[in-house]
Length: 133
Image (cartoon, rainbow, N blue to C red; front, side):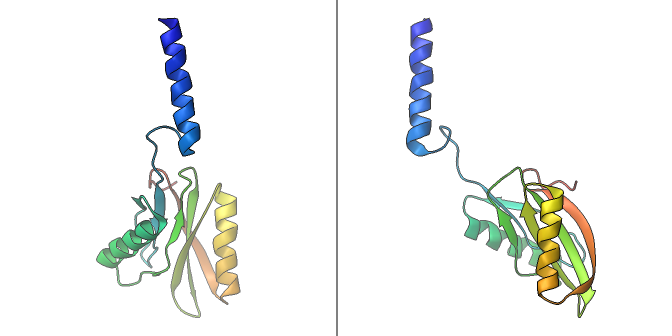
């Protein structure tokens, strides 16, 4: 019996190595297209393109102030930082990274590079669960 279990474990490892991921695991992408009300949810899909499109579609159903430039990640351990700025006009964006500080720095840099000011962090959201943190 122990020999059979050993063979099963080896077979599972071989399948995981052959396909580059654990057996049965599929790629999953998370995305969010922030809006001025900070009400956009995180959405998921099997491809980045589909996740980004779903994020835009969901945001448009909730708001007329969507960024139309969703942030995305394939790392479910990542965190999205959602920020909005008021000058030169209202603009919201999100960035994903492995931790809060990295995500915040990334979204701050996006706005600084675009010449925005009067910015405020709205919240952080988990890529894996979609929950605010």
